Length: 171
Image 1 (cartoon, rainbow, N blue to C red):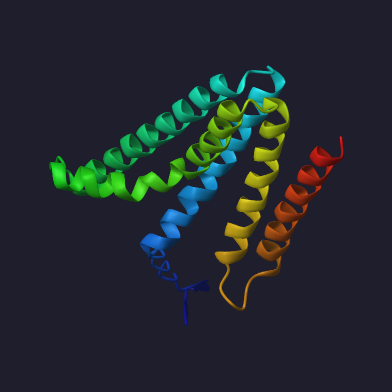
Image 2 (image 1 turned 180 degrees about the horizontal axis):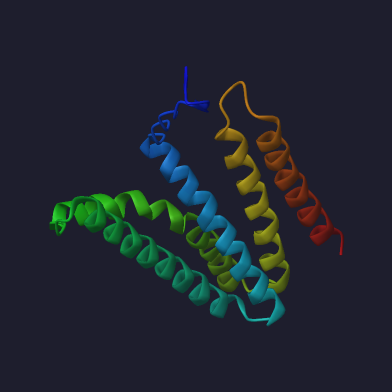
């Protein structure tokens, strides 16, 4: 019903509640995207494999600390209480997923470094594999009925990763 010609206000819908696996997946995709940006810069500067390992591990550590700090701030703002050590550890466990891309790329580059392989080709390969991972994780995040835009985005990331890996192996 309306009052004085105005529609009645509609109550806002409650905020969605995400499962830990969904949060971890979101953190992993976010970390992979930032790792891809780091890899792109490493390719531009033509660094050695050893230097790239250090940069990637450093990027992973910065990502983890930034996530932990922001989540602790959110916790304090929401509860108005300082977290105890067990809460900090619990928050940290949830945030570790953000480092997966950086650590994975660092492991690949460490193998390249130890085997004395071409660092630039390996960095490009890591970008392609990272895009494959982003696309695959995006696809896996979809509910079975899926949303077309998300499906297209996941497929586009996978396709771009395949193209990059293919071109890297051709030239």
